[in-house]
Length: 277
Ligand code: SF4
Picture 1 (cartoon, helix red, strand yellow):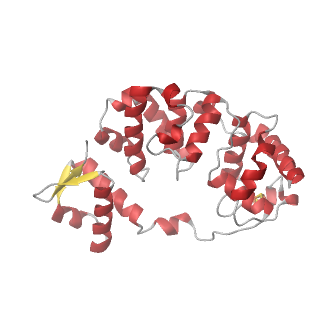
Picture 2 (tube, rainbow, N blue to C red; picture 1 turned 60 degrees about the vertical axis):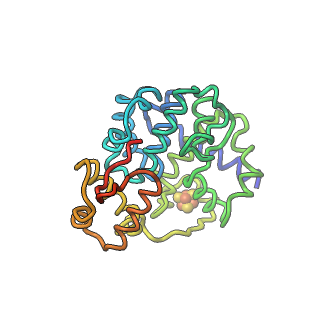
Picture 3 (cartoon, rainbow, N blue to C red; picture 1 turned 30 degrees about the vertical axis):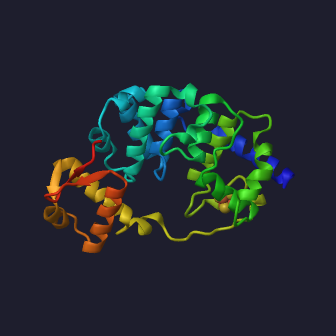
């Protein structure tokens, strides 16, 4: 496993040298910019997240500028990205960072709302140059396929050190990211042009496209409701059910979820609006 892991690292870094994508935030070590792009790109393609990043960093160049804004303004800018909880958590995180600063929170960034092990390690690697792997779905998928594994937990425990030896962790993390989104994609990986094809076990798992999964999903209905409330300010219960063209049960479930996540509030007179608190 050690030899194959080291070979994968060398092959990936060689591929990355010639194929890396150029984004403004890849040149920064500012943890705020890294937190922002990592939050925007969760469940979103990097190119699309990058368009939002440009808008967000212009409006909110620091955690303080976001903390001093409102959830309604942030959700309006977030419109079209979905998973609105991410926006709310980012807003909450900005308030904490405004008070403490990143350096006081370091290295426990996973104490911030919305920051899990992946984003924590992305901030540590890209912002602080720490020797850590940021393990997201891209890297997991590549490892699963390349080594023919169902579960990658033990693999990373035993082999992360080989990926990180004698390299800048930023390069290996970004190499996995770019390789996973352009060659070893979740659906239709381009194995015919893959530079590591000769050693790959080609283990495939998920065959259902993400578009199919999204249609009519709770996530889609939640997105429709938030968009409506951001555009209209507030609506009454009946109007909302009329405007959201989905089954009653689905809309009700989405409303309950949004209320539970404190993204919306339902007043006594059944008026629904974004919860700006
Ligand atoms: S050969 Fe196919 S499955 Fe294997 S790493 Fe390359 S693109 Fe992924």
